[in-house]
Length: 247
Length: 294
Image (cartoon, rainbow over all chains, first blue to last red; front, side, top):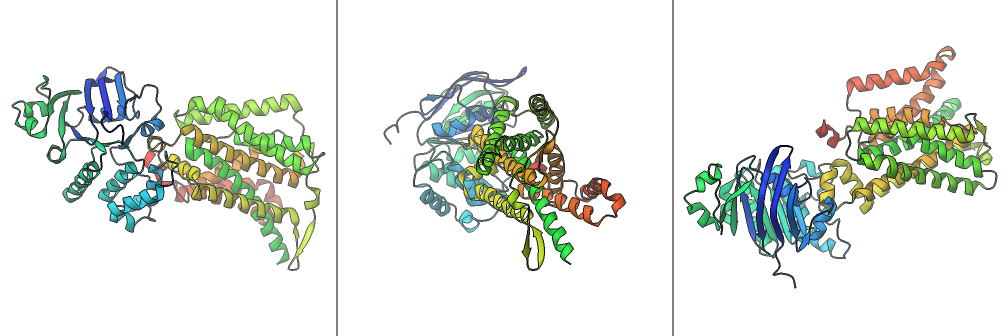
């Protein structure tokens, strides 16, 4: 890809307020091509609001978001994926009344090329459990299988970036391990991954970079080993320390 | 025996009309959570389009009815319902009443409130002999057209990209949008299809009754709406089946009730509806996505 060196996601001074409540304050960071970045923080730290604002699911109050070099200001929800960023939302949000294959085809809504069918087969190779159940209603899949379907659906848009909101929520440890294996495999093909997680252990194991979010701010960031070794880590995770350490 | 077959064909043809009407209402409810009572006016306006052109040519009248209903459906979407997108269902319901009243009163102002006779498709008003039973040709044609339109709508929903996007939007609009589904496209498509169905119903109703009048759509839509509730709001097969059952029930009651009770047949239909809803409050075929919303 000719533009492989460009930043896939750039966020500057993003602030999100709901009435008088500030969910995210002055968040700034970037995701480079093929990078896995994890945003870690306790429930209510603002991770979901943050991803939702990037995906235009929820409005932002202030700040700038660029996906593959293009601003998302005034861009409607349906066009974000056309800029190159696919969302795997919290709770997976698969279409339970549609079949597995229909869910995957919807992932390719933005495409009109001839390779959709071969990409479908590639997803079935990547996720054999979906291939076995391609005609079944997606609502009949287990939680882990639904998470795989949501990731496969995101891949069908051929994104430069996949954003996952709490992919391990409600899953058994085995299923969580499979999800993170897949994320590593996807990254090896050059797709960048931004994952918001409460479950720090998994994210630390696969991420190139982690950002600790508490009370709507990034309080620590850096390589996983750096962040873990930092003396403020426990405090930052639980929101006691507000000062930041930059990479 | 012969009489039973005649009543049955009559009942099925009326059931077909209600099924098409309920399907038109169900389409819009699916993608927008809007119970569109202005669907009545799509039927009525299509009826008046037939009145304007039937004397010149049957084909022209049918084309005019289709264009009138589709254009009116798209105009109401663009001007009245699009600004309210995302509003709660109660607001949408009240606004659809407002649109319906506005259209009906405007029509009365322009053409008057009296019914007008229309000799539309007189060639179908004869009896044909099928296996020794004399049946109304019009009833048979109505059944055939209803089946064709139900099959066509099913095909669009099941086999086309647009249909897949519409079904996805009906289950989870936000997620569909996040995948790149454009709201304006699926909602306009749903309105256009509901307009087409309304035009077909108008053609068959006008041919059967030989009349157009400003409230011709309303009674159909109220009964068909009851059908969508019985079938399960939010489920399209449910809407079609519910509409069909209500239509069939009203004709069978007309035939089977003692003479003195016939004027009250609708009361019996509604009692049956109440019983169905007591046993199955979400309808016969409840929509999974709607259940989650509640």
